Length: 85
Image (tube, rainbow, N blue to C red; front, side, top):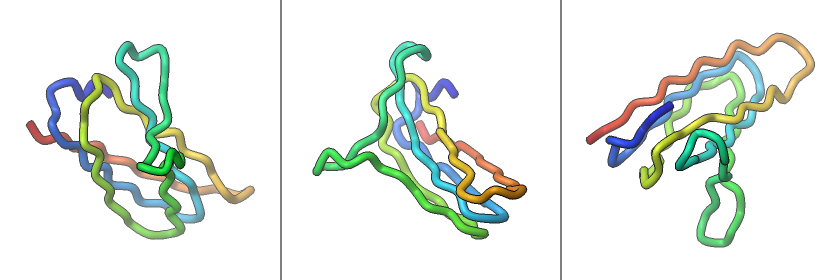
Protein backbone atom coordinates (compact mmCIF):
# COMPACT_ATOMS: atom_id res chain seq x y z
CA UNK A 1 0.00 0.00 0.00
CA UNK A 2 1.37 3.41 -0.93
CA UNK A 3 1.45 5.45 2.30
CA UNK A 4 3.78 8.20 1.10
CA UNK A 5 1.39 11.00 2.13
CA UNK A 6 0.63 9.59 5.58
CA UNK A 7 2.23 10.95 8.74
CA UNK A 8 0.71 8.18 10.85
CA UNK A 9 -0.73 4.79 9.94
CA UNK A 10 -3.22 2.76 11.95
CA UNK A 11 -3.67 -0.92 11.15
CA UNK A 12 -6.83 -2.74 12.24
CA UNK A 13 -6.59 -6.55 12.29
CA UNK A 14 -9.19 -9.17 13.12
CA UNK A 15 -8.76 -12.94 12.94
CA UNK A 16 -10.83 -16.02 13.60
CA UNK A 17 -7.81 -17.95 14.97
CA UNK A 18 -4.14 -17.41 15.83
CA UNK A 19 -2.00 -15.36 13.43
CA UNK A 20 1.19 -13.31 13.57
CA UNK A 21 1.35 -9.94 11.81
CA UNK A 22 4.73 -8.51 10.76
CA UNK A 23 4.68 -5.02 9.18
CA UNK A 24 7.28 -4.40 6.49
CA UNK A 25 8.34 -1.07 4.96
CA UNK A 26 9.80 -0.13 1.58
CA UNK A 27 10.95 2.97 -0.27
CA UNK A 28 10.59 1.41 -3.74
CA UNK A 29 7.90 -1.33 -3.44
CA UNK A 30 10.60 -3.88 -4.27
CA UNK A 31 13.00 -4.11 -1.31
CA UNK A 32 11.20 -4.76 1.99
CA UNK A 33 12.46 -4.12 5.53
CA UNK A 34 11.16 -5.51 8.79
CA UNK A 35 10.03 -2.95 11.34
CA UNK A 36 12.25 -3.16 14.45
CA UNK A 37 12.08 -1.58 17.91
CA UNK A 38 14.81 0.25 19.86
CA UNK A 39 16.48 -3.07 20.80
CA UNK A 40 16.65 -4.18 17.14
CA UNK A 41 13.91 -6.77 17.70
CA UNK A 42 11.52 -7.34 14.80
CA UNK A 43 8.07 -6.03 15.71
CA UNK A 44 5.31 -8.58 15.39
CA UNK A 45 1.74 -8.57 16.59
CA UNK A 46 0.00 -11.75 17.77
CA UNK A 47 -3.73 -11.84 17.10
CA UNK A 48 -5.84 -14.79 18.23
CA UNK A 49 -9.57 -14.61 17.47
CA UNK A 50 -9.68 -10.95 18.41
CA UNK A 51 -9.63 -7.43 17.02
CA UNK A 52 -6.47 -5.37 17.49
CA UNK A 53 -5.18 -2.01 16.35
CA UNK A 54 -1.61 -0.78 16.14
CA UNK A 55 -0.03 2.44 14.96
CA UNK A 56 3.05 2.93 12.82
CA UNK A 57 4.83 6.25 12.48
CA UNK A 58 5.33 6.61 8.75
CA UNK A 59 8.61 7.61 7.23
CA UNK A 60 8.38 5.39 4.23
CA UNK A 61 6.58 5.17 0.92
CA UNK A 62 5.11 1.65 1.09
CA UNK A 63 3.71 -0.63 3.78
CA UNK A 64 2.78 -4.29 3.60
CA UNK A 65 1.66 -6.80 6.20
CA UNK A 66 3.35 -10.20 6.25
CA UNK A 67 0.79 -12.47 7.89
CA UNK A 68 1.51 -15.97 9.17
CA UNK A 69 -1.39 -18.30 9.88
CA UNK A 70 -0.42 -19.97 13.18
CA UNK A 71 -2.89 -22.84 12.85
CA UNK A 72 -3.32 -25.66 10.33
CA UNK A 73 -7.00 -24.93 9.73
CA UNK A 74 -9.01 -22.11 8.22
CA UNK A 75 -8.35 -18.63 9.56
CA UNK A 76 -10.31 -15.60 8.36
CA UNK A 77 -8.10 -12.53 8.57
CA UNK A 78 -9.24 -8.97 7.86
CA UNK A 79 -6.83 -6.04 7.70
CA UNK A 80 -7.63 -2.36 7.27
CA UNK A 81 -4.86 0.20 6.80
CA UNK A 82 -5.85 3.78 7.65
CA UNK A 83 -3.61 6.79 7.15
CA UNK A 84 -3.57 10.29 8.58
CA UNK A 85 -1.94 13.23 6.87
